[in-house]
Amino acid sequence: MRRERWYGAGWWLIGWLAVAGARAQPVDLSFLQTRAEATGYEETTRYDELMGFLDVLDRASPRLHLTRFGYTTEGRALPLMVYGAPEGAGPGAVRRTGKTRVFVMANIHAGEVCGKEAMLMLLRSLAAGRYARWADSLVVMVAPIYNADGNERVNLFNRPRQHGPVGGMGQRPNAQGLDLNRDHVKLDSPEARSLVRLLNDYDPHVVVDLHTTNGTVHAYHLTYAPPLHPNTDAGIVALLRNVWLPEVTDIVREKYGWDFYYYGNLPSPGSERARGWYTFDHRPRFSTNYAGLRNRFAILSEAYAYATFEERVQATLRFVEEVLHFAYANATVIRKRTAAADAGVVVGRPLALTARPAPSAEPVEILLGAVAEEQNPYSGAVMLRRRDVRRPERMTEYGTFVPVETVPAPAAYVVPASLAAVRDRLQAHGIRFTVLGTERPATVERFRIDSVHVAERPYQNRHLRTLYGGYEPAETTLPAGALVVPVDQPLGRLAFTLLEPRSDDGLATWGLLDEALEGATYYPILRLPAGE
Image (cartoon, rainbow, N blue to C red; front, side, top):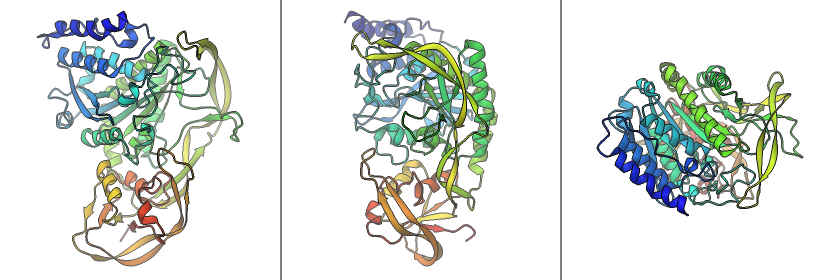
């Protein structure tokens, strides 16, 4: 294909000639296009093209530094572009700036490609000198192609009914068949381990995850969500819900006439749920909920699937730009809120083990929309295209979660040395623990197992478990070599969620304690009570 050959080689050669020896002076990057732009938004950028695009930017501008933060299942390097850190792209160089660190990731689902294209465009703007003031108070880190293996599995029948790109897009799972946005707890994929390592090393104050919607026909160009787990620090959630997201929404409406709102869907036909606007799941297997339990601001972005591909890219780009404008203007407040969350004491406080959606106090106005059917000219498949229709309907919103079952957070957990999979995950998540050098007596709480339910069908290659029972006090001797995991640490909320037996998204849920639970009367991980 003539256009593809030009795109694959022509701009690359032009780029090298344009930037050679020119890093110290402004460079015209108008020649540099994404595949989406070069094909009139019929196609999406492939991995090798993206890496070449980033390399041109890295060579063109001293403002940007390119590195990698890990690898995919098939061995592709995961690129990370860093803006605002003069010394380089490494974790030390970034953290030494003392600035507010914002991490934006795209393409976790590789059929939802608008974020990837939008972030390439944003990085090109930064390389050309636009938004230079951001670097005064921010370091912006962009991972534009997280599910790189899935990105390369382009098929015209992926993401049915989504409006383009008509030349096909990648698949939702990675090369292992795993949904990477369900892997933040169990860490079964190299991609998720790479991502969590990035969060540990760079410790961004803000995490933004870019997606495309499924399902309901509505009138919003983009919907969003803050962290949803009820154990998330209240100060972080308050700033997002009361100030940050409303301000971005108002600015986008004023600038572009587009409506943005909190992510939601109507119940599916035949559902037993009452009609209402329902957000997604609260559990930390999802990226933004996970980041929230790490005491960090997190924002989910969902461009509207039935808007055209070009509109989805533009909506995502505009949303991220306004999120970053707010972060720049409120950088000190953001750092103070995360520091306060890290210093907050959760020991002895009731924390949620399970949760349910909470109805809004009053009905809210939701803008429903309309679509028209169109045909993909190459596959013949039906696509739905957004029509410029706003149909307001007042309904109950289920946009937050409240605890169903709680238990006070202990002072610490004691993990037997034999639970190697648990130790591995604690280390990978960055949760601190000490190893007992000698045995010692202790008053503990142990969980008596009354029953265990194991799901018949596998989910993400695992059979999920639910434990039933309750705690009882006991006197015991803690063995040498046991791990003591204090809850009084910045990641204490996350440690609680991972280690509690009744947690609805813990390590036991995902089968990582299966061998120890086989025929057991008690859960093998003990609690040291608060106040002991």
